[in-house]
Image 1 (cartoon, rainbow, N blue to C red):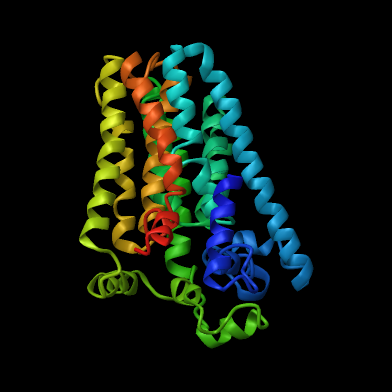
Image 2 (image 1 turned 90 degrees about the horizontal axis):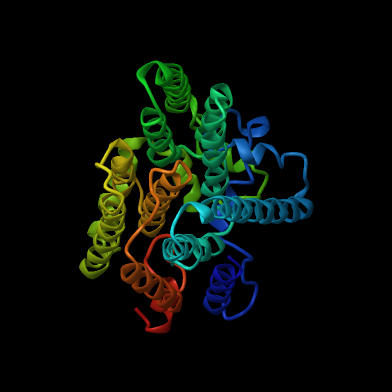
Length: 359
């Protein structure tokens, strides 16, 4: 994570000739500048509400500290899950599982690169929801789902499908009924609230004024908060027409997504398990590629879901191995070599390589 953050900060410093380089993305930072007290019920405003009482200098320190704690919490979660997985699978498979989380370009290094992303908080809530469901705490899982959707609605495309599929696979129909109804009810209610009232209806100028100068009036984050779904679709189409992504880069996105699904299918086959609904949940991430231009970020979410499915299978003892010994060692070596590429990125793939080769 520290390496990913160093790449983000270093590239920002180079872009600004080393003067006044931002500590992290201003797009991510803007999400901590709005909240329910000053802006009303604005989408993605829940986390910013926590920092309403801080002045500018204290807010910056508090936001950085908060996000460091989030990353530390996620690192602790991964460490704990890996510790639980270690005695349940073969040694070579465990090394591969650890590599998928730790050294893959879409793993820990990318979390550090995309510092202060609201998705990171939701990753923790996804883990907390799975833990709650595992202990029969359905109400807590539903509450965590509501919080995650209020924090960032993209959870609808990766967290909710994963939770529903995990519940569906957990046992008999009678055991599934209450968790399914609870999660679906929480999801539908939260989605309707966000759809109907989750934008700042007073408009752009009012939002800028209410932020008291903390957000640049020309910042793109304002467009993201204010425009409706139809405008999102038009925006993505316009950026495609402007050549935001080359055919080569689009091809690489497809190759990486296909590789992740191939790995998942291979793990199912190695354990003689038929493909189920959980194996299809990464596909729920694909609509995000139509709704926003953060293609590398969507690919990272796709990767996270695939690795989480594999890990969940190990924890629940449905998977006792990932791949064969030779394939596992080759995969670990490939992932380790991928560290040279740097983090996956947030919009374009491999920002470190793009800078190094002037792409």
